[in-house]
Length: 434
Image 1 (cartoon, rainbow, N blue to C red):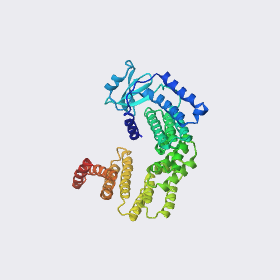
Image 2: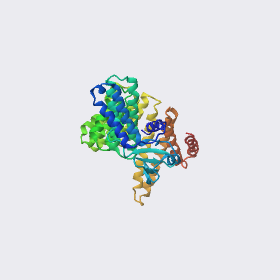
Image 3: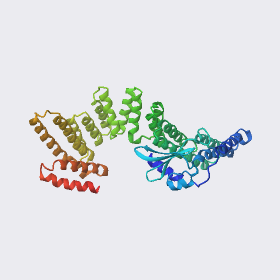
Image 4: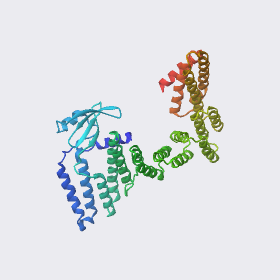
């Protein structure tokens, strides 16, 4: 979302600078264009509807005249005629901003003094101006206006909706953000718009869910799903959360089960499944049954065994987890995730031992020493799989994570054997160069 917003903001900053017009003038222009559509002869002409769309867009853009993301505060101050506008300091997403409240727009400057957010508080004409403009352009197309002329106009409206939606999201208004993302999604799927925006549909659903509008969230998540947009499988976890919020446990399980068979590597699906089975006091091993069905179709897919290992790791059945990871390596000897999983099992074992050790009474020093020795052995056992993971992986993120674990492990073990001090020096250098 942030990356797309930046692209749109830069595009908006190329607008020419004009003086803002009185709201009454914009209202008059819209009313005049609307009146033309009531005349039967004029209403039959595409140009009449294009003019109406342009009137709506002019009214929409009017409050933002000369307010362009990316300009510095000095330039803004020079151009701005409202010299006594209230100024305050606010935090957005943990960052500090200076907010200037103009009569029609709130603008926000970041710590570098750049205008990064503009939120219209008093539009020149009330109503959903972008939506009305889109309807007018669609009507013009219906009456014969060429698609190559209408398409870019609709795409501009989609971008404006998306930009406004992101502003609402930044300001914490999830319900408004969802409504605006919906606008972007719906217009992008309106003829003759040639670029459907499934990011907008996903974001409409995501923000609807955040505002507890689960029906809308389901509707737009399913629109994404119907068009093959799955967010790498995350959408199944999203739909499951919507179902759980509406106390439909069965639907939640079905979404996750379907998602797992299609995206066995998806961590969100796997975590949600494990948590769901634990919450309902059902045996998480039932999830393995789903994987077994997938294995029949894809017997040479090591990721299915990796997921199985993760399931058993999640429920602290470390023995079965290790067996599953080893099976993954039988299928693919250089499968980095399996080595990573084996290293992770050792770390989880160590966490449990440390928790047991730290819960001991001070008088149980012998047991404390025994557990300490066990922790050391487990840490030593984690070194080799993480080393192998780093060696075979072609994934920079996986290699970086494995190297980081090796740095921490060898630092912890540096007093156990001189070789670990030497290894620490190596991995410390590797991590610093990543």
